[in-house]
Amino acid sequence: MIKTRPRLLLLPAIMLAGCSTTPLSDNAGGVALTWDANDIRNTCERRGTLIGSQGSWYNYWFISDRDLTRGALNQLQNQAYELGANKVSLYSPPDFSTSVTLIGNAYYCE
Image (cartoon, rainbow, N blue to C red; front, side, top):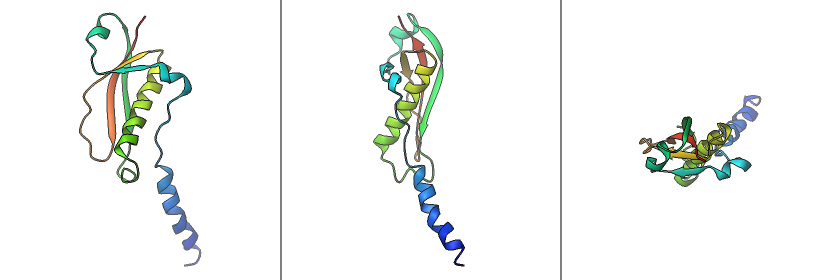
């Protein structure tokens, strides 16, 4: 019984390790986010569809909705930067109760 006690003490630490959100990459801060894609679709080159998601059934109690949302947005901006895009057109977010998931299209605009 004594040997399992240290393992049980590690369980909360392991669970809390998943309580951080995605940071914004240094260079991804220049990626613009928009809800209105009307001006983008006709004048910009589409680079791909992105999904940013933060939170899960075991850690959403420990992270604020604001931080979950910021982490999901950071994921979108980081992914867009990796695709060489400088704008992301966001879709209305789906309704989740334990996480934040955002979907958007990445574009490169001159």
